[in-house]
Length: 260
Image (cartoon, rainbow, N blue to C red; front, side, top):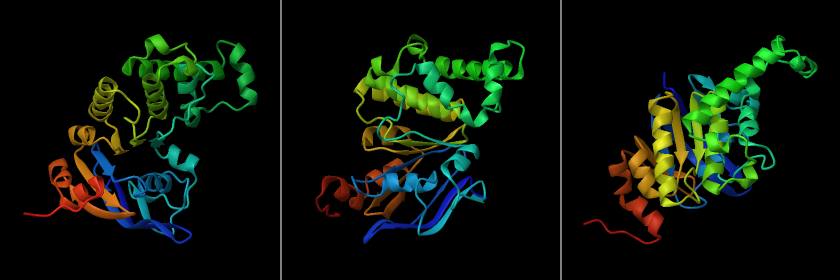
């Protein structure tokens, strides 16, 4: 049984075929990249995986369970977390509070039970301590100590990207979907992001699927790459195989590449 697999996925919007008979397989603890030019259907794939869209046909299997038909919250509870291409943070909340929001699937205290937080020995108070302890581990892991109590709106863009990554990690996922994690980052910040993603796989044991336009990053970080264009797969393989493929070069450069 594959850790994660997509079989013959199709998704259209009116007459536009955004994903066209796409299949892929990701092994556990692998970093798998999906590349393609703008409009190739990459984010649509993610939106189908985490339940924002429902496919027209096909299967999306996570540890043997079909995700098709499930809501985003149900998929998150199964152990799949996601970051977005555009930051989706609460800018007037602190880094700590944004990360705590990522713990919502693990919170067992009811709304009425929150009243008991004022009692230090209550079940709700003990649960709050556990969640804060987990978030502190993430803050240490991503070296966000200096940003812990700052409002997200006051942080530089690169730090905000790390906060969003940390919020996804707060879910304690087994599969992490990263939508253009290096977009808008400086070269130094991009190098740091490569470092974090590798550590997420190597130290935390989390499988990563990422969408990324920066080919240097993709080449440095990926175990396998799937290249798509107009929703259809072009080729899949190692970074060396995919990034030297004539159709991939043509799709990115917008020109024909002749084979010698």
